[in-house]
Each structure stands twice: as C-alpha cells, then as structure tokens.
Length: 318
Length: 283
Ligand SMILES: Nc1ncnc2c1ncn2[C@@H]1O[C@H](COP(=O)(O)OP(=O)(O)O)[C@@H](O)[C@H]1O
Ligand SMILES: [Mg+2]
Image (tube, rainbow over all chains, first blue to last red; front, top):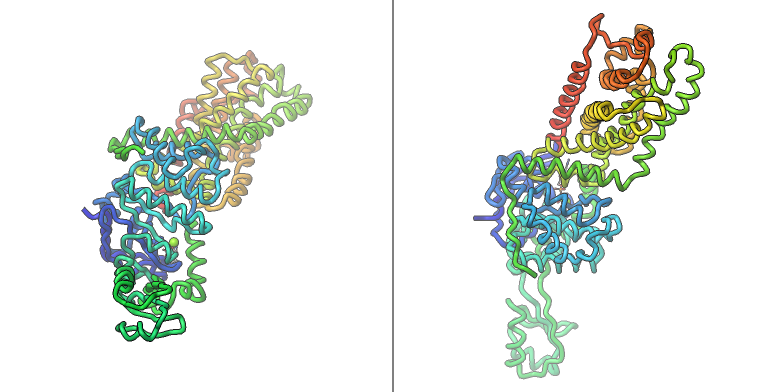
C-alpha cells in the first residue's frame, strides 16, 4: 500500500490558485521532500493531506484512508509538525506530550514508555519537566517532532522543519530525522525551501507555482542537468591531456566531464601514468536542477515577484 | 533504545471523546493553578462591591431593607456575577490558543470538535465554580447561614451559570483572531450583563424599561435562583422578602425556579451548539 497517493489535487483561495493539479505517490518508509520557493503551494498541499483544508478537486489517500471522507482515520495515522509553532509554552514538555497522548487516545500503559522513547530520541528527556517557554527555538522544534511521533504515526508530515533556525540547529534537527528513519518504520513527508536539505530525501518533488515540475531521486534529478566535473592538477598537464578523453585545460586545472566522479577518480589514479597533485569533484547542485526546470534559481523566485505572495501567505495562515 | 513501541490509536470513539474532554478540562485547571494571580484578581472586584459598596450604601438603605444587612442581600448577586469574568476568560483563552498556535494541535486531533469545545466550556465552569467556593466561604461574614445543602445548591447553580457563560463566550470568540479584540469586546459585554441582571438591586419597583430589559437578560434567570436559595435560609418577614426577592413574573405569571434553571441550561446548550458549529468551519 502506498503511504501517500495524490491524484489531480487542486485548491484555490479566491483568485489565487495555490495548487493546480498535482499527482504523486509516496512509498512506505520513504523520505519524500517537497521543494519549492515560498508561495509554491507546499503548505497548502500538506494541509489538504492532513485534512486541515479541503481540496477543490482531485483526491488524496494517506496511510490508505481518503482525506476527504475518512478524516479521523487519516488523523490517527499521521503526525504533524507545522511551519508555525503549536506548543503550549506554559506547560512542561511532558505535559504537552501527555495532552497529545490523551487527545489521540493512546492506551494508558504505552504513554510513559513511549514518552521516554521520543523525548530521548530528540535529546529532551532531561528537560521534560521544564516549561516550554524556557526552550530555545531548536528545542521547541525538536519537542514538536517528538510530539508528532508520540502516537506512532505511519506518516510524519514536517512543514519546513528547520525554517528560522540557525545552521547548527538545522543540522542537528536533520540528525534527529535521520535517526528517526532508522528507528521507526515511518514515512516522512517534508517540505523545504532549502536546497541542501532536499538532498537528505530519498525522492524530491520540485513544486513551483502550484505545479510539480520534477520528481525523482536527488541523484537522478541532478543527472538530468549534467554530469560530474572532475578537476585535477598534475605534474605534467600536457602528458595527462594526451591520455584523457573529453578533457579540457582550464586555469583551475584539467576538467573532465564524467558520469560518476566518485568511481572515476580511483580508476584515473591507476591509469593516468602522470602524478596527480590534487583532485576535486563538483556535481551539479539541486540549484542547477531548479534552474533548469523553472528557468530561474530558487533565490530569484523568493525575491521580487513572490514577495507580496509570501506576505499574503503569512497573513493567511493565522 | 528499545524496539518501536507498537502504539496504534484505538477505535472506541466515545471513550476517546471522553478522554479528550477530560484532558482539555485538566489543562484549564493546570493553567489556572499556574496563574493564581489572575484567579485572585478576579475576586477583587466582587469583593469591593460586596464589602465596600455594601457597607457604604448600607447606611443609606437601612430603612428600606428592614432588619436585613445590605451585604446579605447583595451576597447572592455577587456570588453569581463573580463567575462572569472567569468564565469569559476561559472563552478568551481559546483565542489566545489560536494566536499562539495551540488551538491547531487541538483541532487536528482525531476526536470530535464538540469534545474540545465541551472540554473548554466545562473547564471554564469548573474554574469559575472553584472561585465560587472562595466567595461562598465569606457567607458567615455577611450573615448568610451556610448549610451543606445550601452550599451545594449554590455551587450547582453557579456551575450551571458559568457553563452557560463560557458557552456564550465560545460562541462569540469562535471567529475572532486576536486576543486584544476579544478582551475589548468582553469589557463592553460584562458590565451591562451584570448590571442588567438584578444582581445588585432587587427586581421590585423597577422603572418599566429596566424591568423589561432585566427580563430579557438571560443572566437574570441564573441570578434569581441563587438569591431565592439564600433567602429560603434567611429569617425575614414576608414584606422584606417581597421587597428584596420578589418572584420573576412574565405578564403576571410567576416563573418557577426549575423553569429558570432549565432556561439557563437550554441557552447554554444552544450556545454550545453554535460554538461547535462555528469551530467546525475553522481550518
Ligand atoms: N489561507 C489562505 N488564504 C488565502 N491564500 C492562501 C492561504 N494559504 C495560502 N494561500 C496562498 O496560496 C499560495 C500557496 O501558499 P503556500 O501553500 O503557503 O505556499 P508554500 O508553503 O509553498 O510557501 C500562496 O500564493 C498563498 O498566498
Ligand atoms: Mg509553507
């Protein structure tokens, strides 16, 4: 059974067509990323999948249940971490989780062990009795993730899990997400507008202006826009050039375009016959992928034209 | 780390909804315990009314109230209206929750919205009734002979009243997004509601316009049973009783206490239904 199944989904807010008919499937156990600039329609899609908003057209099933007709079944089987905080900061971390456990009707005897498990996972066990308002931004986000996992959902939705956090905290949140993938048999569906974070996903869907423009593994997406570039410096560039195919001499050194840089380089050392003094491999980035599919970089789309859209999105969320 | 705890949420819908109601109430109680300042502050105004106004005006009205201390007369009204602020505040707190995001955590849960709203209304009523207990403790100081029976009757009536008030608050705030707005609105609403309920003056000999407005105010039907219960335990002459606790009449017909309470309860339930419907439409 697919974890998430979306067919022809569309949603408008008045004049604004936020989601313009998207189709995709997410397999169980997969970490699936929605990548796109602000205003692309990522949060809207997540809200529909989580039964928080009604679609205008199309259908979606999550954990086998229809989001339009089996709302409570969907809700029982998903965990949610929203873009905006949803903790009661006047309660302790523990009480926030207990509240959640009761609302989700967890069997009583499972609450305490599960709470310890998820709090340890996000490194907040020692702080469980502190009020949430004493927590840093990163700790709050981790607590939200722990709470989303509390009732052992099949699918965990994370809407911009690292937005507004400093790079170090972002990295640590990702460590927790990776750990989570190993410990729980769970499907993770997340959105981000950070390219580097999308790399962490098994598959990425690139969304732009309400439509999916690409969907594949990060490697495959990057392969569609070009090959790896291996740059080497050698003791004798001319001799090296004579041996290599498809190589050009640049001020940075000799640049060779190959399919798979990582396996190419060891072979190169064996076959070149000229001493190599330095090697670097550069790959096409997801930025290049986004550029090739949308005609602009993600940073461009964040700026000028999307600004008013972004503000509207912020106002619309409250 | 242990293996994945196999936690799956079970299906028993009714038991689940009941647990949701309970935890929402419990949270309100915890929050109240944490914020004791507000809890006590809410008592200041009624106490000022009772002891300062009651004592100050007492000398003026001594002739009119016969042997009865004005404070004794005012006590039931104060008991009833002291819950107003607290009950309304419980409703306001849901706007607070919305502004700080926590409402979403509640609304996304796999339980009926009505459980959440019912939990809020019961939470407000519980906190307000607890406050009522504190006011009740003052009974001996204003010459009200408190018995267990009277105390329980009064608390039950206070509970009903504050449930209805919280439901009113919830129906009002369901579409409001900012705490500031709703605070202002409550200020505007609370004083007229209590001033026009007969909580602070007897219903006898009112000017016609006021006697009409008072009869239209639902709060009147919650205050009157409270006062009647107190007066039933007082040793006063029939003339004083007729002056200070006259029955409520509709076009000459005496409205019995049970009907008044039933009226308050049905208004409360209707308002709950309105609030639930409103919150059902919220994303
Ligand atoms: N509640 C709302 N009311 C009106 N417009 C909205 C609302 N939510 C989102 N939108 C609009 O829908 C579009 C997509 O927004 P959103 O899904 O939040 O994008 P993203 O999460 O990718 O940044 C934007 O143009 C936004 O202004
Ligand atoms: Mg978003």
